[in-house]
Image (cartoon, rainbow, N blue to C red; front, side, top):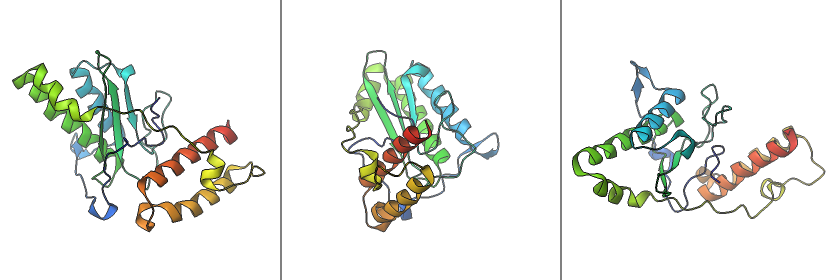
Length: 203
């Protein structure tokens, strides 16, 4: 199952180097777009494509609300990427992911804008052409987590408090972050491990 938090970047999709990311300048009602408005844009576009809300996951490094959508009232995470997973009424799983902008909100808004552009294909070219256009967005199942979170973060079983885990997490992140010579895959594994630690230790 795809998790809304932390970010589940689709396997095999290239990542944008942080120094190449830019300001998206997406606006909503005359203001810079919020995470809430950007997510709403994605839901609206997918609804117009016949995708039900329950078949959509917006995955980011922002913690989620009770409905599974990213919360707006949070500090911008180090990884601004966003991935949207959905399943068609034919059971085909799709994904679209963008990380070229400097905020999560802008990357989600960019996905909404891309969906809107592709929906125009449906209006002008028909469903068959739209299906072909979406072929490159087929979603593969995420790789199964092979290692326990303690092993990934580097904390012994005697550590049972989140402050100590977060200290170890930051230390490990300084080693595996792409900007420090690490890889996006290692950082993604570390983020998943932190989420697992929070779930286990905080209940």
